[in-house]
Length: 142
Image (cartoon, rainbow, N blue to C red):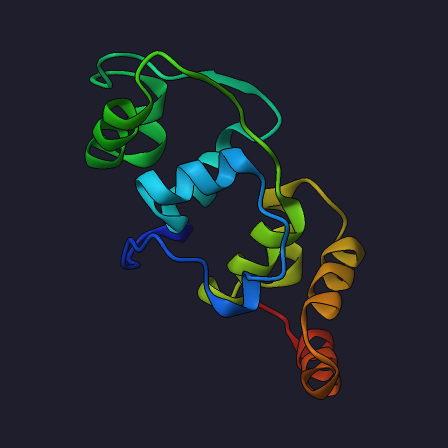
C-alpha cells in the first residue's frame, strides 16, 4: 500500500467523510488504528472476515498495516473477529481527497468501474462545490 504512505495517523474522520454511515467495525478500527490504517486494511481485506490474534508479530495484519498499528489493533481487540466492510464510496472519496489519485487508479484499488467512482465522488460534494468538483474530476488524468 505504498500509495497510502506518508500521512499522519489520526483517529478522526475528516468533515468531508462525516456524512458516510461508517459501520461499527469501521468506527472501532478508526478509533484504534486511525483512518489511514483502516483504509489500508479495508483495501487489503474488505469483504472478508479477519481474526485478531493475541500477538501481531509475523501476521498478515502486520504486513498490511505495519507493526505499530498491528500491535494497537491486537491490544484493543485481541481474540475478536471482524467482518471487514468494503466502505467503497468512503474509501474512494478518501483516496481522491487525501491522495489525489485519479478515478482510474481508485477504481482499480476498490474493484469498481471508473464511472462508479466518478458517481461516488460527485455525490460526495455539496451543491455549492459540485460544479467545480465535476469539472475537476472530468479533467483529472493522473
